[in-house]
Amino acid sequence: MAKVEIYTTPFCPYCSRAKTLLSRKGVQFTEYDSPHGSSEREDAIRRSGGRTTVPQIFINDQAVGGCDDLFALDRSGKLDPLLQAA
Image (cartoon, rainbow, N blue to C red; front, top):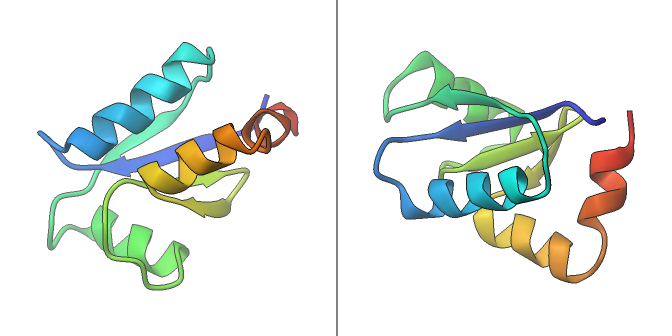
């Protein structure tokens, strides 16, 4: 199973949607609480190439984007292969 990390903030509906999709697929993920100004948020921005929105999702250390990007990967059939890669 792939290593999945997600940077989130409390009360973020997009974060909740992304986590729900991953959970429905049975994916275990590491969640980082990353409020504005935190070192976790700075880490997410650095790792994602400058993207400042949440969630920021990484699969096997590759930035895949946010919630909309995750759902687009799922619709196109590309998410499951990413999640199966070790």
